Amino acid sequence: MKYNPINKNLFISNRKNLAKKLKKNSLAVFHANDLMPKSGDGFFPFKQHPDLYYLSGIDQEMTVLLICPDFPIKEYREVLFLRKTNEHIAVWEGHKYTMPEAEAASGIKTIKWVEDFNSVFSLLANHSENIYVDINENDRYASEVEDRNSRFANAYKLKYPGHNFERSGQIMADLRRVKSKHEVEQIQTACNITEKGLRRILRMIKPGVNECEIEAEITHEFLINRATGHAYSPIIASGPNACVLHYVDNNLKCNAGDVILMDFGAEYANYAADLTRCVPVSGKFTKRQKDVYNAVHKVMKASIKMLKPGNTIDKYHKAVGELMTKQLVDLKLLKMSEVKKQDAKSPLYKKYFMHGTSHFLGLDVHDVGDRFKPMQVGNVFTCEPGIYIPEENLGIRLENDILITAKGQKDLMKNIPINADEIEDLMN
Image 1 (spheres, one colour):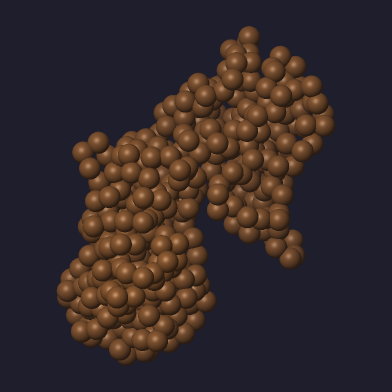
Image 2 (image 1 turned 135 degrees about the vertical axis):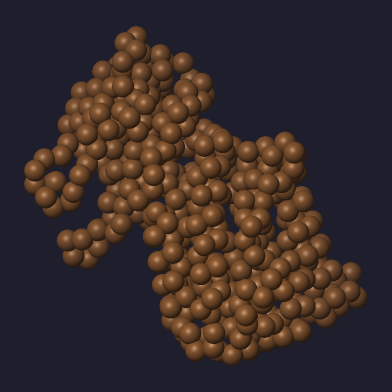
């Protein structure tokens, strides 16, 4: 791993919190993500399953964790299984965790090789009534590819038909949406690295630069600061490309007079940052561009204040929509006479601002969390309003990452330049 070691107390605490949520006489199992094959004999870069990482801190393929809080033998209440290495693996793939290293990283005392999994699982299952399986229950998840946890659940339901199978996905989502001090530290580090990436590219953006050159500079800055890389596919969208919400081609020349929308974030210790900034290719906004920029910034600042305990996502998004409507009227993109007659289910502002303002952030850039539950202290949200005007080849979105605290909102990106005048000054 590129990142520095994480305090194992984070993972010890996370496992204790999970154990309290399980029914009595239960066994919970968590698998690492698969290595995803390419077309030949290679694999895509490995990304650990966030639930397994959250509970163990182990960032390696073929890892399995069993948690059985009520098992009579204390040593078997937490068992971690590792891929057994050998000289061949060491030569071709490099170093893998040793048992002492895994214990130091996770705080788990009982560590075995994956070859021992079935016998240990059978022992624990025979003395348990419930088996918790970790199926992906993120509302945004949609994939036809079956993962390791799903394959395990399907196979072991047949093997243990007398057991009661339970869902750990909702429990994990509830635990993960409230960030501990150690987690906030990792997200803050990811945000700080992201800041360095932005400041680096502000010095090199000018007419004629290619979007991919900007992406390359960001990637360089991330890696030299020990980030794993990008938390998601970066968006470097100049001119009309900024009106394509998930534009990731990043291959066109940036022209004088255009604005570049850049949505990127570093991943550090598996935790994500998520930033969006818009800058003028020529180093100075036109009056119209700055008016739209400042309108989005006004909405953003007011929206951040509404990220507070007790508010709900639905109420929040409705209130942000009202803020945005006023700005769009002031920009003469909407008419108030038409707004007064709009269908409440299809508000007119969505023509220019068609996505949500905030999502949970953590081990996933679109992290797990229940959007129907009130916001609470420890939640980390993005705040990212935008205005997109295809007929003007202009898209403006601004985004920071916000921690909800008992004393108000803490902007984890407060030091990253955002005011239009400051952006211009840094570029010139």
